[in-house]
Length: 328
Image (cartoon, rainbow, N blue to C red; front, side, top):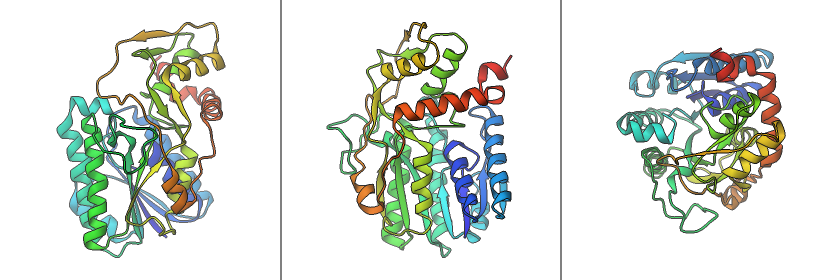
């Protein structure tokens, strides 16, 4: 199959491109290389997928460009069988600082993609959404019927993204699936995430810094589980037209996460606390029964296994990944 991955130089998009290429499919990646974090990490994502494609005797093409470019999107979608729409301006705090920019990339860019897709005969468009759409919980775990009251412009943009996908499916018959990711982590994850910061500081003998009192909880989902469900949707139409939670059901509070990482690396370190950050949801916890019913989705990596795997990977790749090592 011919597969287009928007945002395919990013963390999740890069892993999806790599996974799809390993299955022998031809992959085209569109990414504007937004310097939201070190572009060297995105270059490693591209190189990893290229290497896998070569080994699998499939093709890989990287196109530098933006989902705001309608003409470019039309050309790329015309050659695709399936599109994984991962492109977005990430970051809750970034969205608080620049809401218009987030809207242009996340909402307008998605409409551009869906417009291109409905003019071509596609098997499916798989859209990346986020647990940020829920906002303040009325109950936990979140199921897909939980009210959506996002507390950040990022969450609003993701809610608009998945609703546009749903409407295009209902009105135009475009097969779409929106996946609400819950705090995805793993190798090559964004370096400005809490888990990465905790690991980096501990490896440098510095205490983890917790923003707030550490009582916020997160449902951390390992990247392998995210890639698996995306790969399944290459050929599985069981969830067409649907919006699905994709999480781990394995919640942990931020304080405990910091302690787990600290204890794995250097138990002598004391924890530090700082002021909470705006726009962060208090709690996330996924009810994945719908994804399980439709797709048989079952997460395979719990948080403690995942943290240990991530720390091992981090230590092996510090030279190019660790921000403190790169800057020295």
